Length: 97
Image (cartoon, helix red, strand yellow):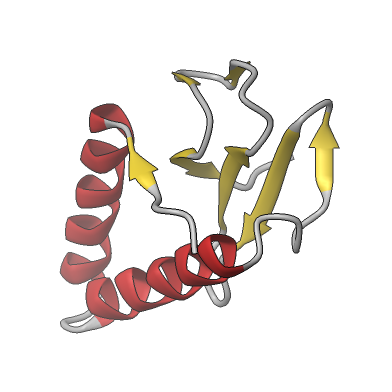
């Protein structure tokens, strides 16, 4: 199983999202973290599980929450709206059209 590296900017986004969900309903933030951890565990066990959405970038959608985990397993740098990342680094962004 490959280790997952979460970039500091992504960790801050995750924490902000957790806190927002906690203000909506006590415990909802914990459910968000569990959904995120489930996706990260699946990625670590099988990085090829989720589809390529652009070049070497893959996306795992969280269950019950409108977020996706975007990641690369190729060693190339990939980008998104706010972050650049290297191999096996993870960031979350809202899954919006």
